Length: 456
Image 1 (cartoon, rainbow, N blue to C red):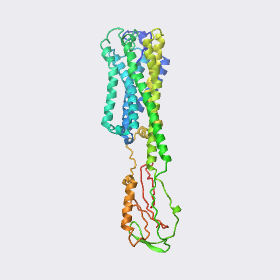
Image 2: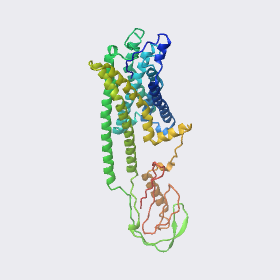
Image 3: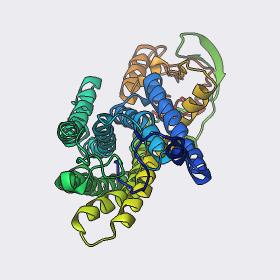
Image 4: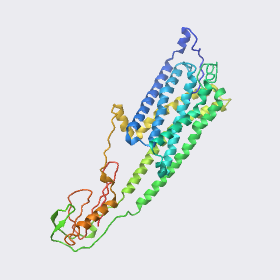
């Protein structure tokens, strides 16, 4: 948000080379301008990369990332419309060098985008908490249209908070020493005209959303810990294995064995004890649940870092902003200079968010790397075959039908079965037990099937 600073310099409408020379930036200001440019350029470039990543990468197209993209739009507009003008005022010793009617508009944009940033973070925190606490109810409002409606509501709230500035400021912008200019022609929200707005606006735009975010984030951590405890408790319990044991006469002579593909081959059977049959427990569902929980925890950590950085960088400004109105006996020059410093610290937060995504999200990192090299093609992720969706229950059913169809041929000859889900060379079971091999293929991070074997 815009702040004020006091500087003794002539007004811009005065003529003469001496006055113009006094407006030229000195050596310290040139270095300050260079430092500010190092903030503006990454802010613009980084947020453009975030917008491109969410727009082009299907992996990133979810409700939370749509909010992050809208947040990147707000940060991008700060870098395009607010920070460059603030840089110009720094070069001109805090004097407003543009047309007077643009001052209330610039202040409005400054307050709007700063408010929109924290409102987006508040909405993201609330959305993620509902998604974790009540996933079924949240899934009913997970469409892109509903996410965009929530984003539009966030922007409307932000506009409603900031709209008094242009309404009130444009009415008196041409008056000398009006509510948006001081004696030094500095564009600011003067305590005389906007004192109440600075207090209540800070409460509405920062302190109340900050309190809501802190409560929601603590509740989210509590829910995630509870889910992790329940999943670990279930994982510690014995898994259910489908095991059937049937004693058959021992056969140790060559037999004609019928296998799943209908071809008869000679096999020699040897007795094997029951203990030699391997059993593999089915834990895929538990693994997937733990993976989803891990993803939720990692995403919450990233958002928590973004949230903490925003608080650390904007809290000094808003505290000082309220103090400038409530503390009448404070040194006004000191408060105004602190506001100038804390204002730029707050602007830096608009450029830090893309850095956080890059460090903690591999998909964002890979997308940024490709976009920097002007490669905007979508990466096609390898898709699992349809059989990856076949459940264990259906596999047992299909194998049981095949057993009933082919297994009773030629009396009760030992029959070796192969899963109907795949074809592979199989060996006839070397025991009096009949083994039924079934598969459960599930998606995982590396797109490899997890295999589970049940024995009959």
